[in-house]
Image 1: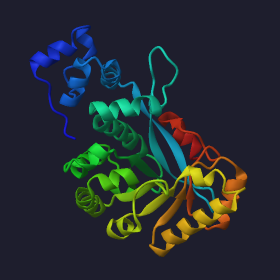
Image 2 (image 1 turned 60 degrees about the vertical axis):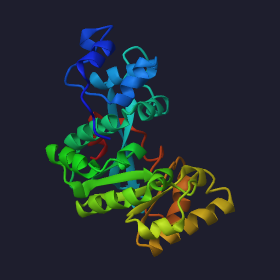
Image 3 (image 1 turned 120 degrees about the horizontal axis):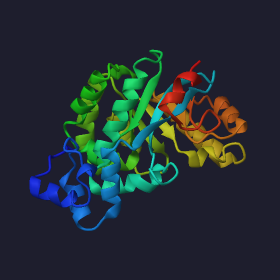
Image 4 (image 1 turned 45 degrees about the vertical axis):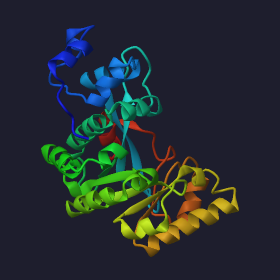
Length: 286
């Protein structure tokens, strides 16, 4: 959603502890202000973290399963907390979503990742997650375009990942925004496929480029026939529709071998690399 500037009276309230904690150039949303003024300390701490660039991108490799060549990276969030270890997204993404900070958080991550990736090989893609609130924002395509162009990163190298739940919240809006993104060259991936709410009709009506098979199916693919059958069906569905099949959560060589036998296209998981800071990515590409 668009980020609104804060009126001076509200700004004075949230600056009550430390004038330097809220740089004037950092604008937040009314939703966040309400959370803070209602005593949501998590929202206040997260807003300060964003203001001080403590939320940073970590990138996890996406590989071509046949060759295990790196095809791109998914942009993930980590909080470099000043007094704690690196904070995982499960702790702060729900806070960002309820406080209205998720759009600003995701856009900052994307800007930093695009700026770095502009100098990487031209066939390396970036995948970024889009939240339900972002998908309801009609300015999302132009915001992503501005970020990519400002970083000299071609939009044809960008993929947007959305969950099944996100799609059904406002199908018509999603279809319009997807159409604009596709016209800009952005690819669209449906994340966590198989455990959500989307019917096959939506796969027909929305311009997806890839389906990401949920890790719950991949976990037992080497030991359970039922999981192999489900993954095989999803891979066949992808190829019938002209989509790329991507398996998530690959942790063992047996899982990777089975996915290759099933003709799955791409894979992601600890077997191929854990999420890493931006500075470590260039050496992983050599």
